[in-house]
Length: 101
Image (cartoon, rainbow, N blue to C red):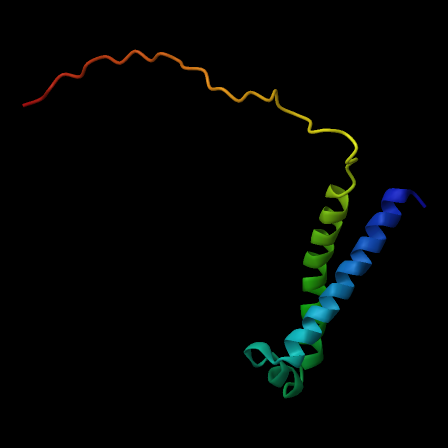
């Protein structure tokens, strides 16, 4: 399996694990009475699965983005730009406006 695919699968699994912990925390601490709603509704299990999947998609995307951004080599110095620290002055000609009375 290519390294990038393996990286993606592991980061998605980590994201869905974080999502499971997040949803468990929401239900345990009864945030906005979600725990009560889930336990006292006949569709509570579906709500928990939807919360887990949708938060898992978000957390997996963020986790993969963080993993990709951390892949740069820190051995090299700063790159990009020209390192200009001084601003150039540009003369701008302004025509005088006519006054309306």
